[in-house]
Image 1 (spheres, helix red, strand yellow):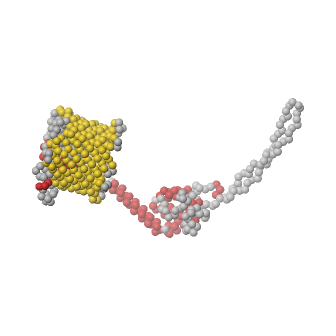
Image 2 (image 1 turned 120 degrees about the horizontal axis):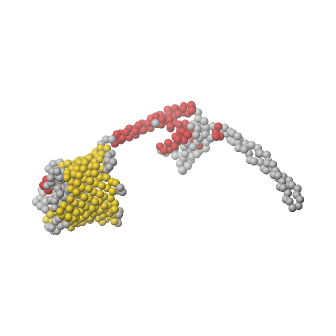
Length: 539
């Protein structure tokens, strides 16, 4: 089709040379313009049209739609589809009008008295009028194809440089399109990189005792996240962690946190490999800091009803990912399995989920219900859970609940509050859940996750009457600050401390952010602090 681009353009210009001159149709095409005659004739023939303002706008580029309309009209013209009955020459004009009626006949003689005489006969019809004059001869619109061919050749020669430039641009665009199409078939790789370093006080090493700046790197945490879109229905992901110097939570070398493939099938989404997941508010199922090796399937059916199933390993090597001393908490048989199901959907306008932990770590069995709804434009979420049987196989029927509500939500200020409570001494968080205080670094437990399960006093994690408040504030509309404050009680009902933190995130460049975070813990007068710098790069 590219080869005929010059012919199509030339055909349009050709018609300007094969029809007689008409009156100026457009206000912006003066009589002395070099294209006046062509534009006038094309407009008269209905091949080109002006704009609603009555102008031609000859300097304005033509769209592909306008080009298509013009070519269609041109083809119709060349095919003779616009030929009119009178264009071949004069013909017989229409018949003249009917002549006037003849005079009425004479009235008959009167009959005898009492009888009515018959009516006289109608007069004869007058003669037909004379034939009208012949119609005007139609104009000759026949195309001289030999002349047209010669004119087209002349036009092609005249505008060969411009046509060559246009052809080059078309070729370039087609080459770029072909390149993009080829790239779509290749594996697309993206991901992120995070490096975190800082210093955190412990009972034995307060920040004030560090030799600054030599000891400024109290610990570091490196995360490399890679994902690949293999094709539209298949993707893969690998996440590597390395934690060094953090109290009780070194990885002792790079650790594979995630490594899975995810496929979109006609039945639903299937994920195979080491992965994490979270249901509801995370009281029952949330292994984001203790990824498991297994399979997860999720699908949607009916009126938006969702279904998920998890089948994973639950032995020491498959959960917790070698978190140093914390690994001892996972005393489980090597053939232990983890199995959970979830149904979710809409009920009376709310998002409702029902979760069942059929086989957790060792002997764990539990179930929960989570809920999410909007009230006055604010989001409220919560979960209620019952632990039928703990990891040791003891029947507990212990219960826990958590609720979180948005108190304010605007572009520059967001405020939320949460409250969590459990049965005193009876509730033990499922081992594979992020709520478990033993499966996270000390820095993550206090400053990133916080709330339920955080250990502010050594050996006394927060497990009941836990309050948690967060504020996300764009100071002056451009300086993002995150503020958090929380505290609570341990399993005995004794106050287990409180903590607060302030973080500022600064965008360095597109996809590159720096976060500076400071936090402080108060536990019966023994105040601990943390300062940390995080670099996050997306690619």
